[in-house]
Image (cartoon, rainbow, N blue to C red; front, top):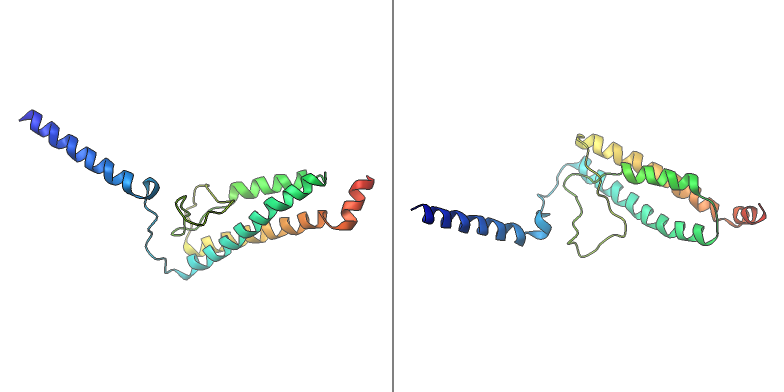
Length: 149
């Protein structure tokens, strides 16, 4: 009888393991449809921020190639990278067909939907400001100054 119970227990464990391994990347990304307007808007803002952040990856390459010092902005980007979070219900999956070069792995914060929207707006405003300042470093006038200095 003990052998039968152990066998059943083992089979059950294997079945659970097989189901877990078959789900996408160990955790299911088939989220319920998000209907909260604040979260939907928060995700739209978040995606715009990520678009800008991906563009900045290319700008960083250009700044390095031009030997332009952007250490202060690089530090601000590091802080931004540590602060950006995903919006609940819109978490990215590494199984997605379209993979961003830049995506987020920071833990989410316990915010209300409205707080999530406000937080994403602040993060968007910050990345726009960093982008603007970084772009100015590549203007011909500034590049000429850095070559002269």
